[in-house]
Image 1 (cartoon, helix red, strand yellow):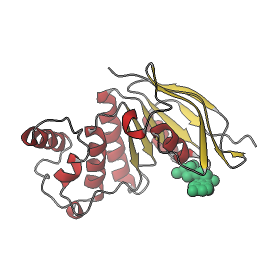
Image 2 (cartoon, protein in one colour):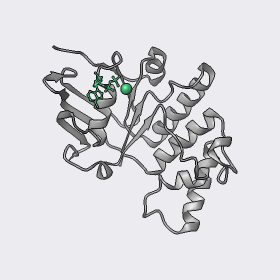
Image 3 (tube, rainbow, N blue to C red):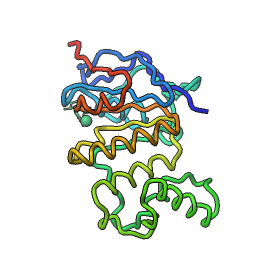
Image 4 (cartoon, rainbow, N blue to C red):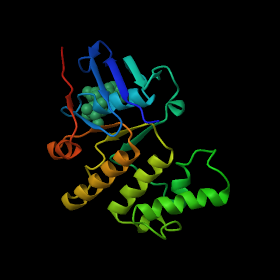
Length: 215
Ligand code: ADP
Ligand code: MG
């Protein structure tokens, strides 16, 4: 069921400039590979390409596959790649439970079954009884956990993390990092983590890929 995420000769071009030298690597299920590089080196753009959201003025090249399936040409919603950003916001006019319902596939069953899935996810994340809460009443750490839960409820085949811990203070950063890594390892999905922080990379425990400029 769990399959590796494989990049072959992936690069991004902006005008006549190549953002980084072509990348080829594989992320095994349950493994966290860290992508590092200075600000502006193309880390977020790389994740857009992998998730199917790359737009003009960028052009992406190279093959992206999950297991045997080449997903390079697939529309974003058919790739089943989850992505979590630094500023991942919950919809403010919806409850925590309604926010999580956005992550659920349409096929996830009856209203009652959907509610059970959401309550179970909240309980596993130490957020029992939070279903009806207004996101504005949550702490930063609780919001971060809900944002991850929403991403995972969609049952992604791979998870992309774009500096998701940056806004958190040191203690919270460690807690949320552990939470994110544990969740993705127990699901045994490949994870690509973009970060500036060598401590994040050390905690991830996987290979490190550094974006290199060639021009
Ligand atoms: P990183 O995430 O590594 O900081 P980005 O992927 O966000 O870098 O950006 C890569 C490069 O693309 C940067 O040099 C940035 O200035 C440029 N860039 C980002 N968005 C646009 C845009 N809409 N139009 C033109 N250039 C852009
Ligand atoms: Mg970025």
